[in-house]
Length: 458
Ligand code: HEC
Ligand code: HEC
Image 1: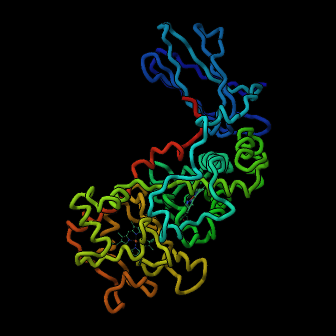
Image 2: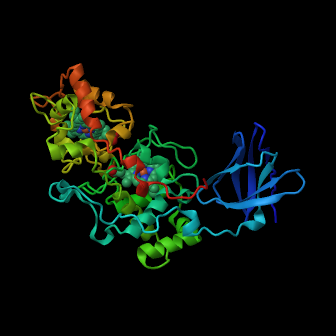
Image 3: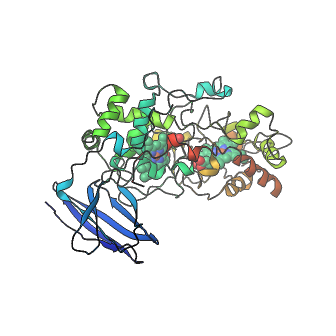
C-alpha cells in the first residue's frame, strides 16, 4: 500500500530544484523524510534522500509524464542517500522519486549496507613505533584483558560509531560529535544532540585514547573504563536519548548487524555488553603515530624548522623556558600519567569537574589532562571550549592562569602563592604554537579504516 505518494518531478534539462518535506507512514511509525532532486550540470540529475527511518524509495523516469519506468529501488542504510543520474541521450527526461510503502523488502545486508574490503582491515595489531612498546607508554595502555581488539570486533565498532540508529530518532551518531576530520572531536563549542539540545562541555578528541594510564574517561573521569563510557552517550538524555533495550532490538532487526555480531563475537546475539566492547575496540583503534613529532624522535628533530625546535624547547622547559607543559602533558602521548589537574582556567569554578563527581574539596575545578596529539585539529579547546585557537591557549598559559587553592603546583610561581607567568615574547609564543602543530598526524583524517563505512549511494 502506498501510504503517501509524494510525486517529486524534475525535468533533467531544466535548472530547477524540488525539495519536499513530508511524512511517511510505515508499520505504524511516522517519520519525516526529505527528498531533493536537482540538476547539477547539463545532463546530470542528483537525488538526495534524507530519511531517518532507513526506508526504500523508488526512482522512475518518463519521457512524457504519462508512462513511467522504474529506474531502481533505493534502500537508505543510514539516514541519507545520494545518487546521480546522467541523461546521455540528449532528449528530455522527467524523473520522480517516491516512497513505496509496499516495497520495503530490500534487506540491509553487510554487502549492500556497508562498503568493506574483501579482507578486514587490521585493527588487532597496528604497527607501532618502538617507543610505544616500552614504558612509559606501555603502562598507559588501558586495554582490558577481556576486550583486546580483534579485526571483526573493531569493524563492528566502526559501524556502530557511524550509525545514527544509536540515537532514539536515528539522527545522531557518535561520529556526529567525534568527527574524523577534526581529530574525532567536534568543531562546535558544544555538540548538538538528537533533539537539538546542547550540553555544557566540549567534545573530546579520541586520538590514542587507548593510552591513558588512569583508564578513566570524560573530562571529569566519571567513566571508570572505556567499556563503561561507550554506553553513556547512547543513554544520555541530551546526546542520543536511547534506551539499551530499544537499541538491542533495533540492531537485532538488521541482518547486517547480526552478521557483524557473529563475526565479532561468535554468535548473532546483539547484547549491550557486546555493543560496549565493540565500540571500545573501535575507539582504541584510533591510533596515531605518524606526526612530524614522531618522525623527529627518530632523527633528533632534524625535520623540524628552527621555529618548531624553539617551540619544542619552550614546551619542555629547556633553554631558560619557564614553561612546565611537559610536567602535565607527559610522554610521547602528551597526556597525564599520574594525577588530575587544575590548570587555573577560572575561579570561582563554573564547572567543578572531577570535584563534582567525588565531592572532595581538593578535586574542585580539576579535570582530566587530555592528550595533545592532533591538538591542531580539535579546536575549540578546554572542557568548555572557551578558546577558539591555539594562540589563545598559549596566551592563557603565558599570562592568564588564575590562582586558586587547587591550582596544580607546576602552574604556580615560586613560593606557591600566585599563578606562574611565562613572560614569553611574541616570537616564543608563535614558536610554541608551531611546536603543538607538529603533533598533527595528517594521515588520521584520511585513514579509511577509521572512516564512515556506510553505503550512501554515490
Ligand atoms: C552529542 C554529542 C556526542 C555524541 C553523540 C557522542 N559524544 Fe562522546 N563526547 C561528547 C562530549 C561533549 C564529551 C565530553 C563530555 C564530558 O566530559 O562530560 C565526549 C567524550 C567522549 C569520550 C571521552 C574521551 C576521553 O578522553 O575521556 C569518549 C571515549 C567518547 N566521547 C566516545 C563516544 C562514543 C563511542 C559515542 C557513541 C556511542 C559518543 N562519544 C557519542 C560528545 C558526544
Ligand atoms: C598543571 C598541569 C598542566 C600544565 C603545566 C599545562 N597543562 Fe595544559 N591542560 C591541563 C589540564 C588540566 C587541561 C584541561 C583543562 C580543562 O579543560 O579544564 C589542559 C588542557 C590543555 C589544552 C587543551 C586540550 C583540549 O583538548 O582542549 C592544551 C592545548 C594545553 N593544555 C596545552 C598546554 C601547554 C602548551 C602548556 C604549557 C604552556 C600546558 N598545557 C601546561 C593541565 C596542564
